[in-house]
Image (cartoon, rainbow, N blue to C red; front, side):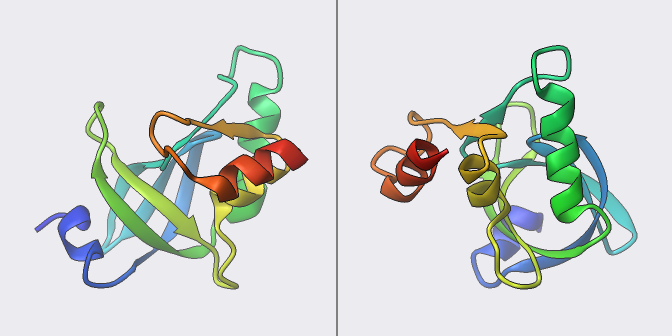
Length: 122
């Protein structure tokens, strides 16, 4: 059973071993790195304005840390879609949206007033 199937019962834990960009990371779990994508957000690509800074912001929040993953299945590119929670309970995507490093996809999360509030404050 993959990550998505197990996550419905409980959060999954792993260590962030690589940050590919502002919304895609690799997490080591059971000696295997899996590429995952943060749920419902997007950021400027590396070649665009602020893309490298968004990657650095994501990296500074979670690289090397043990995190809890709440999964939402697989995305169109086969990556596991997750919310990442830091050891103190901070939701990484909420921080990234609040700090204006990324924005949320309204199509993926209709009616999500928390992200809308965070984005408007940014």
